[in-house]
Length: 609
Image 1 (cartoon, rainbow, N blue to C red):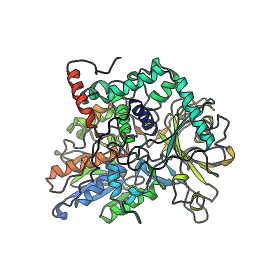
Image 2 (image 1 turned 30 degrees about the vertical axis):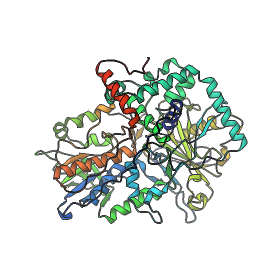
Image 3 (image 1 turned 90 degrees about the horizontal axis):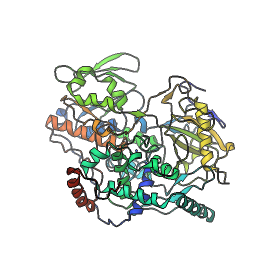
Image 4 (image 1 turned 45 degrees about the horizontal axis):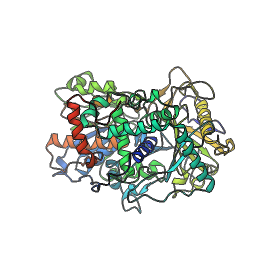
């Protein structure tokens, strides 16, 4: 079954977990001596500008996390906001129902572009979630977050999988997973196998590279490490296969969604550092691994839209932005097409472009680009495929209570079994036809390498072949040590992200590509404020502290766009709080020393090559 259909097939057909685990392991190797206290995260400043009727009108282009965040902050400050979204509110963060899967009064089987991941390094997004009411929750939809207790690096070829509790020294560490004696034996075997296969000198060297990055000043990070691929920084080409799989490829392709040979060391290292501190309970907003306790729209997006509607936000879903012109020093209007295909010129006092970069840059007119050179630099930003597929199972699977990273899989798979994390839902009673008991949600990060069944890349396979190939790669990593975790007999159906079209043909298309982070990306990210006085940018490609295409980045960028707008109009409304990543005070003095060395043209003091 191909084309743009539902991609549902019966039977055996159809921005960070790996990075967090790798960083936590590195942090443990370095030691946890940095026991500094951190202030509690601040709430976003809220207030309404004087005279709500004089606040102005704003057209928000795009209804993903960035667009909804901008609408939220603006509506609270008295602006008249209209959101234009061509497909569905929530963007890549939304969940959706599998077409024609509901029976007996149940909801459709839940599907998604990719599973949600909201780690404790996030501060801005959780603040927004706390401000979205949810029945029975004191802290709004934030209370719908749950913390998986463990994670796993699944190996293939008969090697035991690396399974371990999620480390967290904060106040909300939760309970360790319940393990049987056999699971404990397997866990110890896996650690011993890895320790014996990973030479001691390589472990020491990687720990040194982490130390070099932790003690590098901002200037060195922005220049030297931004221009150095992670593969080169970690000297992966000289190392063992396990080193390459776990410490080079594992922490880049699966989460940063960029090949290790290309990924910016600045981006990988910055996120790794943040996860180390998160695991140590420093500067965090909760455990390193958190997910929602129900499908995303149920737990978050739908309540958010309802709340924004109550604040007066007008949503125009099915309206497609076609062009953003420029004239007389400003954006005079935007050209849109309504759901019936009629074209309109929409005017507002201000415009916030919250569309994905690959779409937004096609809409900026030549004159608009000429008005602000940073818009042209966005052409250098690169996107790639990272797409989800869900497998519906007739039985719960004994995989683990958390995320798994299949580090040996050709297509760089990561996954999570969801039903066990949705305690408010009875999966077979609530979804589908009553026979599906779980959903194994899988992200496919590598679409350009050959698989194990057909010898073709994911883009060259039909949807049915992609499903069979992913299922085979899952079994190769999970069923290879004598314990059958996944059985063909329990596969109920599958669903591939509908944003993918034309795979298996010469012209594959993905409407939901992900910004990737090869070297130099940092310098091409635009600011939220442009030189055009009534035009602002919001999205995960805008320059923010987290420097990664994430929901947190989209949220922070939208806050920055709103602040820039408030500054432009001279509003007296309180500015949005934009919380940066945590900086450990214990490292600031050594970073100052490294700044001196950098300006003298010297290496970091711990960098021995």
